[in-house]
Image 1: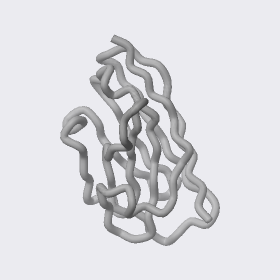
Image 2 (image 1 turned 180 degrees about the horizontal axis):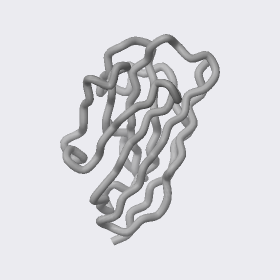
Image 3 (image 1 turned 30 degrees about the vertical axis):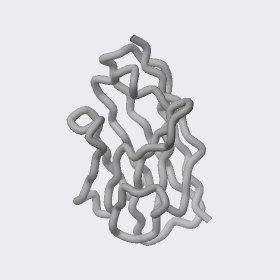
Image 4 (image 1 turned 90 degrees about the vertical axis):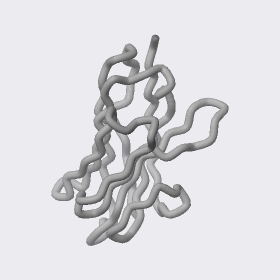
Length: 124
């Protein structure tokens, strides 16, 4: 079993930045792809960003492209989401996810493991 723990969420003013981290522990696979998803109150969960095992391929939702950057440090079993120029509409619970395999996907149902989530609140 793989455990994913997110950190780095909080309250920030519009235009500010936050960096989320997702640390994996437990049974760590030789390779796994990762993604970030978010869910705002009353809304469905939506894809934010994803990264392949090597880090060579990254994918972003149009709503965050140019503002968010996903990265990983496999030596530390950690995936990051750098969020810049935050907007009130970015307010949500952000969850990281992992799937066994090299390739990343934007579909949530492709991921096997999920963290508990971390709250990000952007004030206007």
